[in-house]
Length: 312
Image 1 (tube, helix red, strand yellow):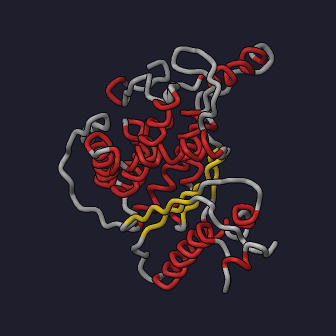
Image 2 (cartoon, rainbow, N blue to C red):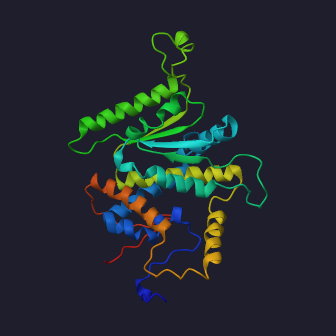
Image 3 (cartoon, rainbow, N blue to C red):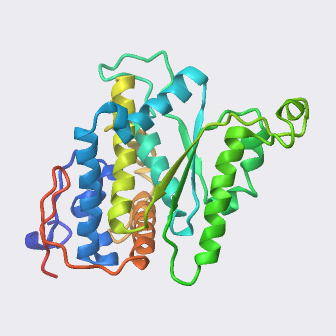
């Protein structure tokens, strides 16, 4: 209230909700303003469906659990240091940055839930770019370099109107790349290619996630899928995926040392991190909104992702 905002105009949320998990709460207001409230409801519905899948599906068919276990295998048994996120859809160009914060701020920990140092690797370095650009930037290293980098390919099957040929080319490129990472450049003879110093060896790990269509609902499910994957890995590593003490303490240190010489910024100055987070989120949602004509959806309350209709 000290900022002069009336109490009835304040949207509250719990203090323990980390920024990387807050889009489902009232912090999602900018998303609702950007794509419409019905679109925001669809986003919640998609996440809710993934929540139910995570809770009810057996481990052998549970997507977050399987993705988490595959990641554990790559990191703790094969020795992977990084995880690449490569969407073959320009509308998802900010997704690697979003998942980078989700994963690295959650599982970038070196102590367990009891405060004891761990003696094994935890969260990977997450990075990536859209595939059409990445092919001409870092795919050379992924195919023939000495680094072992698991890749998540992500794409939607339904194209935007008017770009069907372009979309088909992107999909075929993605599937061809995934196949090349698996099989290598075997040419006419696999035996000969194994002795060719210029061939791609193959046996490079990748997973391919295909959405029927890029909509708020499917995007909500996709983001929730990665949230639950990160949570499962945190449980296996016995670390707390929901704190970020390093960021909090590092952010406070320069403030303490500079307090005497640097004046307090005006209230209107937005925190750079918050601005970037919302730029990423609203960019993703605006892109999804272009693909979908929204229909009215009844208000519903989802477990952990509740929302009340707002009279604008």
